[in-house]
Length: 412
Image (cartoon, rainbow, N blue to C red):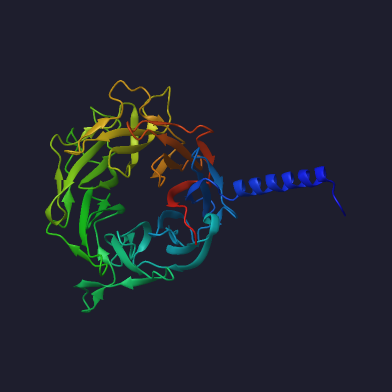
């Protein structure tokens, strides 16, 4: 069949438009991939993050199976090739750590699962080299306190192998297969060579020093760090720990007469991973906030963001983000925009539990448990103020969302 000159021009135009549309649909402008866990159906929602708007679009075949029951924590290994999901399990189904590979356009492919040494795994983190994975169990094999199971990560396959505790032996004279921590641990964070575990059972912090060559965790001279009572002399209710350079921040959800929204406890990291209270001690969360559940520091350590699951304002009961500036000289906090900033705290979806920043430091995202959504915000890098995304800030994820993770746009 022959085409006229005009017909050939029209055909070329159609092909050109088709190629342009095809490129657009193939992640042009994608700056990162995001994965959000959900416990309702044991799934992982995958998204591509748009560079220009911060909008989220689902990845191919999303959602994915979590590889277990009750996914609660997710970690991306350095380089973005492997993702690890901690499945807490149930009373009848044991927990596990599911390994995934990251394919083109952020597609997850399940590889295999591993088990920690204790029971009820609830948190995970990698060391700075990406060679070791630390998994926090609420109950150690002795059934009393919690523990950290340490795995070495094979850089070629992503597979995990157990690292034995070569410093402590059991009653049989063999080395422990785990590293003990305090009662009812809920979260851990790394600061330099220190790994801090937050123990909700007695409102303490358990510090270890990390050996990036062997993965071993070494007890410091201060094996347990107490946080004392709140400003009213009552017990604390510690809910999260966050590390930023030489500073560590704890959130305390216990209500006081001076701050129904709880408090933020700032510390400096000292010798042997000791935590020293900053001058001035605890500061109050923002007015009308309550139940702080998570805290996050931006990549430049300029701003601290705190998730609040509820509000004391009956006229505006939204979940929110409290935003603070961090003084670079002493780590002290001040509300972003000052006390007259009526936008701070910033509204998010219902029941937020985790928060991440994209690799280009433009956007901040929260995973919201109660409504199964992700909330996106634009970050003002100069002031730390947050604003809604230009094309909508709420994105459906998976039911009963828990934590989320983000990775740069990698080619595999």
